[in-house]
Image (cartoon, rainbow over all chains, first blue to last red; front, side, top):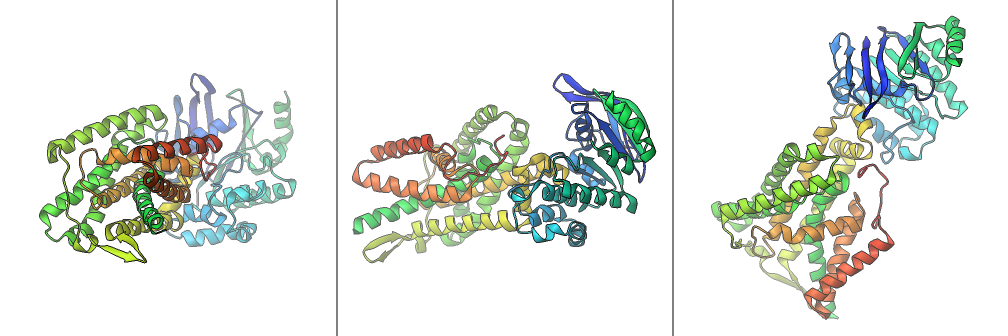
Length: 230
Length: 294
């Protein structure tokens, strides 16, 4: 599905990623784990085109998309939920969703579908996104990404900084989406348990390098925890 | 009493002209953060569009009605071209943008001199707009009333576009969070160009209005541009209602002061008042916390 090959990327002259290779399987979930500052978010920004790599390439279904702008990647079926529950704070919840549905055939149906997935957003539709709680904003962010009916979803720490009552709900939704089929996910996550339950493949990133990788699943959890604690 | 009311009306009509000119800037400067010194020349382009039309269409009323949309297109296209050629390469370099667009402004002025000659030219106002209406002792010039109506119509139109249309949603989204807009599938560069087109087009409409106020020439736009930037800054960057209120307050203040003192003294007092106001409220009348100027 997605191949990030030998990527070197960073800001100014200090590279954050050195020669990193990560692959997301078709209809599968790849999890990227690692400590703060290991380059996990940078990896997703490169995959989405917000940061151009200094070396290496990004392939989507074999097509080289390294030079494409983010919106062109969205048109090819990618979607991205960035870190930190981002939204358009001065647009209402409904406008946040409508914005993405505009000019898209079946936009109305797509909005109805994501509202069924996150019913709480229906009650908040007239409220400005900046006034929502962190959990609500994260649900809005995931909903916004899903409106484009993506084939590949990039999730950057979807449960980070969110009240515990909503964390379980978001985890459940992510698992449901991945099991429904037709969707591949590149998941960056701190919670090892959740990540390993969701993923078929895991990568551990340390100081901008992949130090180990392997098959996902709950059985591998112990090994991953050990690798991360070193 | 009548005198005060008459002066106030003059002030409101000055405010209406200011508002029309500042309206385009609320988009390009307010929303996008681009200091475009050539904005005044887009006003000039709109004014000359009216003049040229009058050479070919004999009816002053018809030519004025045709001039409004045409000036919007002409000035808007110039703006979009400028954005595509130069400004988009300089979004992260505001000072360079200022210098470059100033250069463009001088070039456009010279171009106008080469085509139309250095002296100012006069357009004919339609008969309907040359008269006055008297209401309770106050004399209202028809042309001024027309400009007031035009300004309010443009504010209404722009508000509706920003609030209700897909384009308006995209413009607001790009201003609030450019990266998030891009990864949500919005072609932000295209939105930039469209925003610039509309903002510059509104300057063209302001140019049409100026032909009703007096003769127009190569420096027509430059005379107004500083005042227009002041309106946007005092109103609060990126806030339409701030610009509307500020334009009328400054207009009335100017007119009333002019009556009790002289034009120069009035200008000085207004400028001092603005400086004092910005010391007290540097963010302007209204603010929207966004990354628009980040």
